[in-house]
Amino acid sequence: MQFLLAFTVVGPLLGAAAALLPAPPGLKGKSPDQAVLRHGVTVTGVILLAAIVLAVGFDHDRPSRMQATTDITWIPALDVRIHLGIDGISLPLLVLTALLTFLCALYSYFKMPSGPSPKAFVALLLVLESGTLATFAVLDLVLFFLAFEMVLIPMYFLIARWGGEGRRAAAWKFILYTLLGSVVMLLGLLLIGVQAGTFDMVALAADNGRGLSTTVQVTAVLAIGLGLAVKTPMWPLHSWLPDAHTAAPTVGSVLLAGVLLKMGTYGFVRIVLPIAPDGMRTFAPYLAAFAVAGIVYGSLACLALVRPGAKGDLKRLIAYSSVGHMGFVLLGIATMTPTGVNGALFANIAHGLVTGLLFFLVGALKDRYGTADLDTLAGATGAALYGRAPRLGALLAFAAVASLGLPGLAGFWGEMLALFGAFEPAEGLSRPAFLTFMAIGAFGTLLTAAYLLLVIRRVCMGGPRPAGETAIADVQGYEFAAWTPLVALTVLAGLWPAVLLGLTDPAVQQLLAGGTR
Image (cartoon, rainbow, N blue to C red):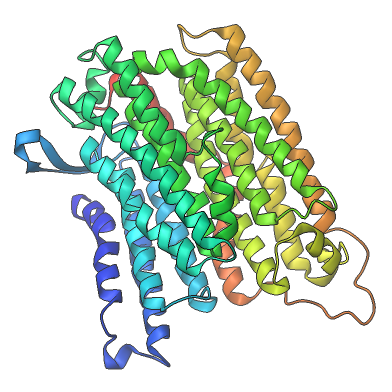
């Protein structure tokens, strides 16, 4: 298990280096491009298999305990260590990252985005995977920062080189926002490490802030929280996200929404909550206020985009919907209760599955029609995608109702638990304020349902295909292979939430009580 976790984190880096080398003569296939794309599928498939074996071998009776740990001295003078481990909080995110990256590699094998050489594309995809997996596996503050930053460069190039219209401006906006946030976050991480005398996240969580003064905790939470809020993204620090999603290639949008946004909320749970609880308690009401503002703002922005004649882009609409959905995650964290934090972690996974599927589907529509403009799509389909490509229309409707939080699907449980957590926040937090936040968040769910149902109505529903009009290509075999796991897991998580909550709840209880055993 120890070796397997280390291999899961480092394996994609080795695969990225191998992708840049010439393919052996017997493995070239029809062309070198095909060989390197197949290499990407193979490496991400092996990493996914390793993550599944980790999940199977995980001691589910003790999910609050760090498992598969590696602890090696790296920089003795600063007590910086190569410390890896997983518990019930990080394991689902690790598996989600491995799954989505594999599905993106598989999709790209058949539908490579237009741009430079596939060699660079595959190498960047694997570096991105390694950085994301490392973020969820490292247990040292310095290593966490390095892994957190490691994903920025590959995502920048994926947007700037393989993106669509406006890709360079969107890529620069993405990198500048996240780098500025990361600089502030680094100061907070260094403050904690210097004041506590260690950067070990397990030791710091076990201390539960007792070795840090209230002033240090408040300062650290403000600095770290700003950096994490940019990545999440929290309103009003979200403005880089719609441009990045609109310009990114399909697989870039899937990974950006599916796993990169989770790095910010994971940092709140893993670092801020257990290490600086007094500082978090000071800022929790403000975090909750920004969260519910994001919920309402994201929904209103989507309603504006979906109006006929607004020339709204469907990819941009889903990006704004992510601002709202991640608002529920932040609201759950801000409650500082097991119920709220479990809801946040569940909503994290649900958002990765559902929004990843949505971006895959919108990418397929854009490939078929050459645009994601809602007015064009509604006109081109005759407002009847069901009639022209029934399976594609059905999948889009399924993903939309899953995103709006229909009971029985994954999107429901996280948002409900976050609202329940706001109903009874942690001791020391103002209950009237959080009841107000809960009411605003509940209103946001109605707005979410409104714009997603309008999307279904405009793009999917209508009469039969007019005579003489050709049908568009329905779901292809490779699309079916890439999307089916997301559909199945969305249903499974909705009908059997105990699978995920059974992992996260003991770990969250332990973390809030004072670290991990």
